[in-house]
Length: 116
Length: 109
Image (cartoon, rainbow over all chains, first blue to last red; front, top):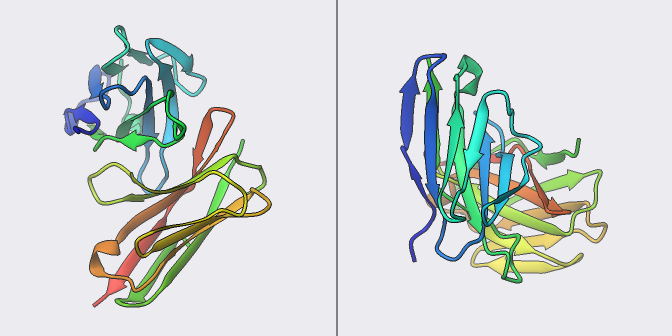
């Protein structure tokens, strides 16, 4: 079974430029999460989707960050415009709400963003 | 906000030694999860704990859900070189998951 797929793996951009990250969750997983991980820290939740609905976006900086999961499968996270402080790893994870172990999230490899 | 205090922050051990790390919180959690993250990769789930007092093993790894539901620990027995990495605890409650800052494990040759 394929795991969570993310692309690109690395992205280098100049500040004020836009950037987008893509995630394809594990097949059948209806819950999708985007996390931010700064160096030396644990992941911090940005947004959680149940199917196509964003059910928790309280930690998403909505002035510059946006996300979508139009068909309830893959998802895109966008930053526009990027700032220097956005340099971090962006992780996507998924889980199955229909499973008794729905708390168990499976992570993708992440996208490492560097803003110059 | 809720915080998880994970300790130690880093460990330097000899190959073959046992390892113990823990996670504490001022809040109660319904689920405790332990992840390992290798450089350049996402966290990989090691063990999930769902009941207070639960003790679960996965190979050389053993984790326990504290009786108070405010803490958890992870033990690794007979460490090997591939155990090197960052170990994260995570607490889950009310559809929210909080991660600790991680314990970085180093194994000396």
